[in-house]
Image (cartoon, rainbow, N blue to C red; front, side, top):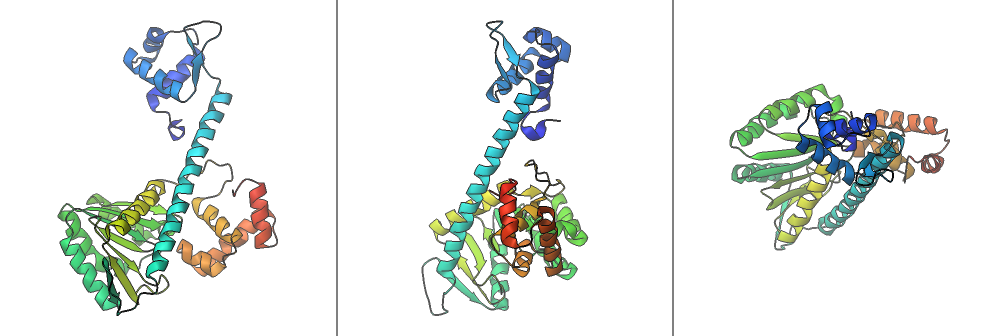
Length: 329
């Protein structure tokens, strides 16, 4: 029951045992819970780290369980602090990615820089990607911020994806949360999962990106027109930064099959929370739709619903009210 708060099943059992039988020692708890004494001691160590047990003033040398009303607040505060720190890391990574993209946004065909290869046109991009997939030896990491994929596109990707996985290549892909509403995209992700591909989703993604073997990255020059051109990056410093960005987003993303859970008391889904932040930042419904990978109509419906829940008549007022209610930092 308390696994979401950081307690495993054994540790939770020890905590409950101490609450109901406060005078029992390790041996007594082990007997009551049907656990080895070593497991009880391990549980006590974890409870101590989480500040859920403290030395007793009445009985020196003994430990006492902190009352649940205090203990749960401690766990929630700890979890909220961890989430805030993770969000800060993600935002910092996004800023770094934006700076990196801007450095290469104005590349011209005649430019020639070490570690940068320009690809002009969809045919050239696809040819280069096919070659990269043939040469990959260990790992492929992908950001797929396009939202729902058409059945035709997925079917066209099937042979290449299956061939990579059959070769033992590790594949990790981060989609937008919106693809969870697409049955054929979910079915495709689940099929690839049976072959070993790992997939997660996030409310927003900083850019479209493919990294192979942590040595080569392909990103579009123009995020609004990914078929117009792309750059292949191989510089060590650049790849280190892009791999760190991927790992940061991957860590905070949600695996397929795992339902959304928010413990901040707002009642918002991850998509709604992201839409609210974009709304407060002044993004239009069209821009919000693009970032979330949903239709313009869906973005407008989400934005309208949020403003109604907040009782706001403008986007600025929605942001102010959201901050007051603790929905936005």
